Length: 169
Image (cartoon, rainbow, N blue to C red; front, top):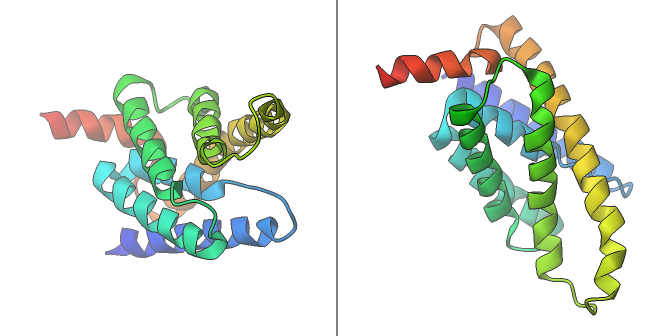
């Protein structure tokens, strides 16, 4: 029960912070990094529920495209693949899923783009910005949430692989 309050609070803060910065024209996909963290630490079920719920909330706030919940579910799948095939103790290795997440979060914008193929080239700087932001946000979010989790006695990102091995036994 204690961790569910923590999950709701962390997601609320990430959505609120992202929405506040979005009002000033700064696109900060912090909820995606939080969902990545939660999906690794607490498993795919909690990751899927938080991804779908957060996606719906973001859609209600911005009303952009109906693909945000699907994009966040893809982030959760990337998190599960990362947990199963890569090391979770090395936070600097999160550059790779950060870049992939940046591309995934940019895909809904491409799906509803109304311009010509040539004018789509103008979206390349936006895509690169999305990738760079996620490369920076992902390790920082994991570090900060692990610090917070450690102080509250909850599960840690770096111990997720050990928890997975014990569950398989």
